[in-house]
Image (cartoon, rainbow, N blue to C red):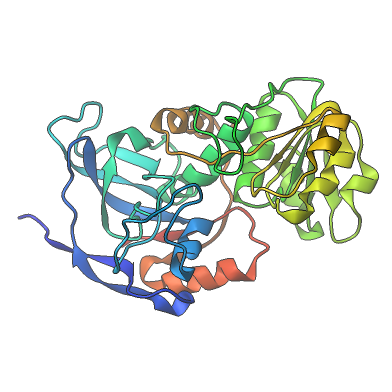
Length: 336
């Protein structure tokens, strides 16, 4: 017998975590190119609280088609429940994970069911549970597209040229700022996979965690400034970014690259004089890249750390946890 209603978290207004409402909602029907996924876990990401707080237009877009109520979220892991007639490669019962419809606020992941573009999905890696799989897509694809392969030619809204990763390999040094966070801890592991030496910058409470993931050197930003201790780095990935990101230019060798995940303010004359490339990217859904990440997860080459889990009905508490900051890995919602 078909299921017509489901539980979901919806926004009827914008505001703080208290506006997240757990309630009944219609089960979506998959359209052309889509599958219906019975969701088992949902990754919590910054765009979720940006939408909750009132942002309805992605950077680079001039208008929005969002109407309230809206279901937030983009990262899911679950089981295929139905498949559109034109979709090949997935069947009912397949375990899948994905970053849905990004960049947009139309992922609708905080729910028991979601209609997902098949091109945004990959098979969930064996031996990885739904919680860890749901923590992977946005953070993992951000790290992948910044460091390994962009996978598209769409420039970030904050620069004219498409992002081009630096070819990483043995003998190179990468500094990751914000290394304990969702993107940071995965970027550290991808850089190590490619053979680079990694300097991890985070608060001191994360040192043991980051060394276990392979960090060759650790800098506690609460005790010292990385730009005063480090030089001749090939690449900086600054997952914190923002106005203060330009301080890391001092750590780079001539010809190096600086990749702020959240764009900052840089003097073009200074970067040209130093011979440094500054580039950012806007992560995009990509099932094929996610499948490559899945193979690394299945092999144990890359691990996803889980900061905390909350039931879907407790999405408010998950957002309150995110607001406190100092997150180690990912926050995930579990779906009954």
